[in-house]
Image (tube, rainbow, N blue to C red; front, side):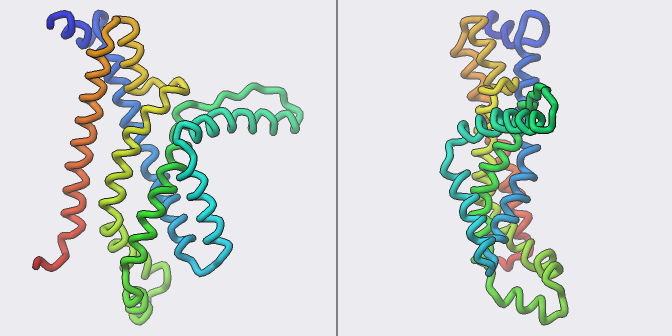
Length: 237
């Protein structure tokens, strides 16, 4: 027991510092990915809900690709593909420069693409749950399309899509473990290194499980409170 506490302690003899940094990277990557995934997902849902056939087709192709590809493959395509693409572009311009894409940025882009493809379906279902009369009521009040969307539709949209988005957030939190494959020092990578060096895999991987469960519990509690807050104006039956 004392040996385990020593290994998990902070300082020269323990791995607490590096594991804490890994937790910070995991949480930071998730929080950095979330707004981009939500914005792109919302725009994709708007395109799917549009009457323009070309927009619908482009949005359907986007979601088919990134919902169909494994998350790890998407991550590799972004991390290695962007590097190769930029280098080839610079060669065409006469520059022979080696470019290495930041693993945090690559992870954020890849996870945003995957998250947005699923979030778009959550937003689309929410759009279909809002009666057409809500739009007509906004126009009857003299509101523009943008004002109707921002003031009437969007608040209802968030409330309807929130349960699905909460589930997607938990999936995103777990998917951040994939970035350890491209060298980012997240929670899983740091605990893996500690397990190999100390020959204590059960201790450190068990700690990783516990930390992920704690993060999931905190997230679930936060989303429950947000959902309760979003329904504060509903009539109690």
